[in-house]
Length: 249
Image (cartoon, rainbow, N blue to C red; front, side, top):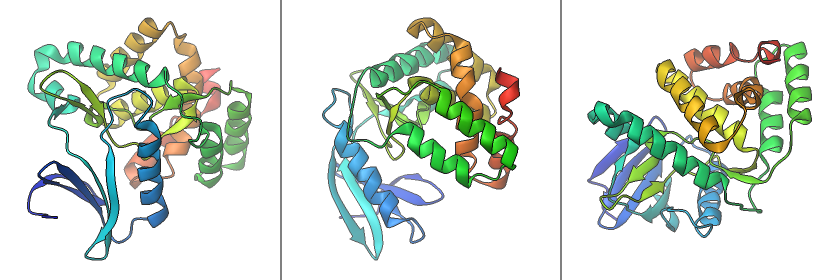
């Protein structure tokens, strides 16, 4: 495999293209278990009826773990929104439609969303009272088994030249309540500094799906707390400000 064509760089990984292959090389600090879990999640959702690049190989390159998958020719919705601001609403509509397609699917071998969030809240930097309130709220919310991406945002949707929305980066996929997935996307827009699009996204999703916005809002402190476990200090501080359960009663 040739690693001379970098197509994306992140803090913990570099992504290359070699012909029809996409090679995601993780840095040496990345957990092997997390890498194998990402590949397994991707494999499990490949056959549910969505556009998902197929995993071809999990290997090591120069002592670093790597996931090799199909290379999909396309442009992310984040780039399309940035480069075509006059069409941003159109791309936002496609984002919501694609997310609703995800939620219409089931993958029963995936981890359960509630179990994952429970573990993360227990690890979050929270005072005991807030942690207890969040865990009680989580336990009381309905348990569903819908496919949830876990990090659904415009940068994780590739639009091909023929209009197919390929969904990438399934590292955080679970089965659970779709409104938790929506809350995660909403907070992602806020984290990027785009509060206006966050509100427009949430209103659009709730309108199209027939979901009560207050139902999604009940998940926001829970999702914020679970997401605060990772990321830099600035992101953690921002997310922890969303963890007040009383604000969403």
